[in-house]
Length: 78
Image (tube, rainbow, N blue to C red):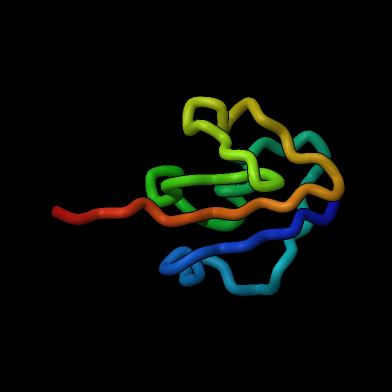
């Protein structure tokens, strides 16, 4: 299944092989992060079709054909 991916900022360092990735049917948001080699703690916000997925639900929410995922980095500062 083809999933559209948009990485923001430094997350592009983890994966830059295009704007989509092939994932298995039934994959969760956390599965996709692992496939892209992005540590969960580095993904500050993840959205599926512009709807935010809470961190505690990343291992539950599944992606489906036609979805697009946007991943923003964790923001650090003081």
